[in-house]
Length: 205
Length: 205
DNA sequence: ATCATATTGTGTTTATTTGCACTAAAAGGG
DNA sequence: CCCTTTTAGTGCAAATAAACACAATATGAT
Ligand SMILES: NC(=O)c1ccc[n+]([C@@H]2O[C@H](COP(=O)([O-])OP(=O)(O)OC[C@H]3O[C@@H](n4cnc5c(N)ncnc54)[C@H](O)[C@@H]3O)[C@@H](O)[C@H]2O)c1
Ligand SMILES: NC(=O)c1ccc[n+]([C@@H]2O[C@H](COP(=O)([O-])OP(=O)(O)OC[C@H]3O[C@@H](n4cnc5c(N)ncnc54)[C@H](O)[C@@H]3O)[C@@H](O)[C@H]2O)c1
Image 1 (cartoon, helix red, strand yellow):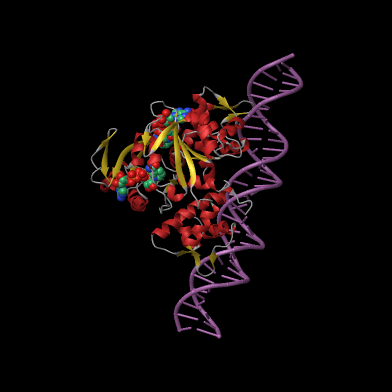
Image 2: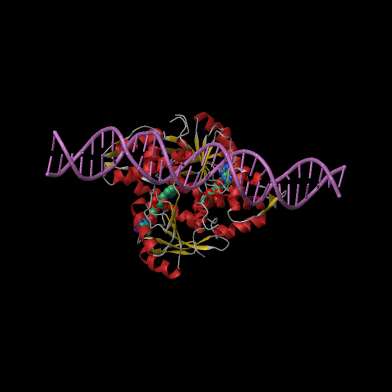
């Protein structure tokens, strides 16, 4: 458990999402077989992954879904809600701020920033857009560990450096470029075009 | 070249993106070393990946960036622009439709669909929102191969089945759940919460 | 109580992926 | 022209990941 491979960790949120969906559909137990079919991963793989963290199932009967969900929430450290800041209040930043799907999965946007004087001070959904100049200071003060980055590619590295200076350790990057960060900072990339290009390879022209 | 591992293909768009960014910054040659530093992948890995498709560099001098970009565009089949349909014109669908970053990377939204009678027929950016009832027929007729899915989780599988029926072979899914599709159909997932949860694991509470 | 069935957790094997290290080639300087 | 430096492409080894297969155990039916 001290040294779980990244690739195992990366699958856990997918299991969690599928399990939470099962609960919505009124199910209370499942098996590695059934879960595997839902998420497109082999049953053996799922059992191996989970075995990295303990024993959560029962032979013959499978897994109790609420218990497994709870265990995964603990493992992923999302049983409490993390404070997150959002930088870049353009088209995408607005959509993200209005999205209701974060908080019930462990994340709460607590502040949003922009550099455009016309936007700073305006209000959206109870949020006042703050000046990015205050980002480092604010993040340090509130001990913010996570951020979502929605600025144009041209300023993404600059803002990333500010986030790192402010003590942020995890960045969800929507800008279409690779970021340079210290090894202790994690980045996850959201670039729909990368997804489309990965699939285009397999199409016939 | 007939059987390149998925994982290799999945890295190519990342290389491409970094190379295109280098061009913007006025560079015309690079090395596996330099590219590797930009994207956080070892130089050896990059050389191995590219060697799956041919020889693109020159010993001693590295890679000519425009040539390598062109080669990657060919390999990924994005040197032409693919027609894509968008289903689900809510908050996110609107933001995606207005986003200008698709077409210069190989993808063009040609139609958008919704099921809400209040939305069908309304106009956004020269697009008329079409009735999802026509999706299968339209997709077949226009031989659409790619789609972006922005409907709520509760209707995502239903719409997916329509897309498959319409002949779509690649789906970019924004709904927070795993989709069931035939083996010949590819899906890429965009779920920001999954990204955040993957990082939360590494944070200290 | 016994048996058939289901299903976990895991040791072992197999497959895949990455990294290493070297050869070959290209460029530039003196 | 020769030497030094740089760097691609690649065979091989090491590391990592996935699949297999089975003992152990739980359930329910007869
Ligand atoms: N809109 C989409 O659907 C979409 C989809 C995929 C990716 N993206 C990417 O997300 C990012 C944002 O996209 P968008 O459409 O919202 O762009 P946008 O231009 O509408 O918004 C960018 C915002 O960032 C602000 N900004 C610029 N520099 C800043 C800085 N240094 N500090 C703080 N704020 C700064 C701008 O003032 C603006 O409000 C881009 O990188 C884009 O490529 C957007
Ligand atoms: N808004 C965001 O920033 C964001 C972020 C991440 C993920 N998502 C996900 O993206 C999806 C869309 O999000 P949203 O905020 O735009 O939701 P939304 O409710 O605003 O929009 C959903 C749209 O889909 C349409 N729809 C419903 N059923 C349909 C059907 N069968 N056929 C065609 N259209 C149908 C609805 O009429 C509506 O217009 C959701 O699954 C959401 O979880 C959204």
